[in-house]
Amino acid sequence: AEYWHARVRAELGFGGEDPADVEDMFALKYRGARFSLGYGACPDLEDRAKIAELLQPERIGVQLSEEFQLHPEQSTDA
Image 1 (cartoon, rainbow, N blue to C red):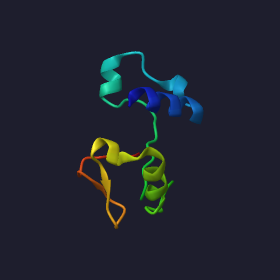
Image 2 (cartoon, rainbow, N blue to C red; image 1 turned 90 degrees about the vertical axis):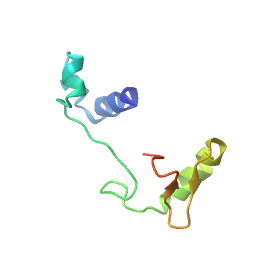
Image 3 (cartoon, rainbow, N blue to C red; image 1 turned 45 degrees about the horizontal axis):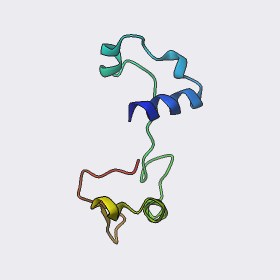
Image 4 (cartoon, rainbow, N blue to C red; image 1 turned 180 degrees about the vertical axis):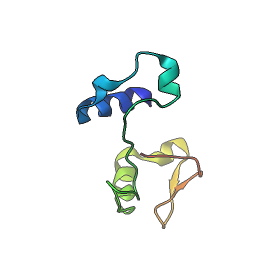
């Protein structure tokens, strides 16, 4: 997850601001952004159906409900 987070930070133009100290990384002392369905950048939860069609989460035991929620509860597609 951190690899992809670092890659997104780099593509957004502020990856060079990452701290050199791993302890600062764990303390979240860096600029970043995380995107998730249902929030600002991706407000439409119905888009989750498109992602599920592409990724086929049922292969690993994850189901998409009629309300566009993932089960089990701690699953993520962000």
